[in-house]
Length: 130
Image (cartoon, rainbow, N blue to C red; front, side):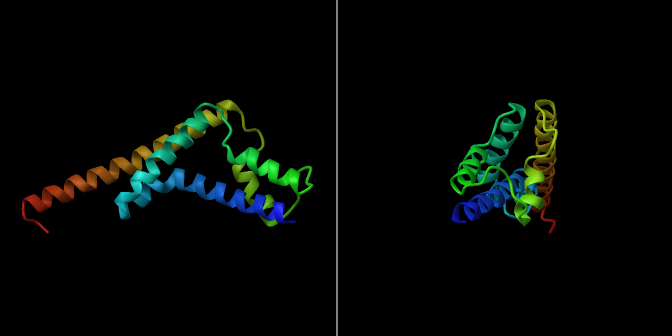
């Protein structure tokens, strides 16, 4: 039971990391110092997708499930609703590459807009405009 709970918590952590990788660039608009955490996380996410690699959290989760006596995924809330988001059916290296490109594009847009807004703001302050 404890291993199953740990595995479920790990899946939630994994999902949170994936969401952070995808949309964290937009959080930088509000908290610019977050870029120091987000940029390496986004680079990791893009690399994992483009290389068709496996995140180390996945084998750890599988070991936890095996230690808990599970042969596969049961139908808990986490497994039923969250797992398909992280491990969709038909995930191929080509699909992963497109996901990586998508993550890169979303974050390039987020950081591009953030940088542009900062430049506009600095220019306005330099001119004495509020």
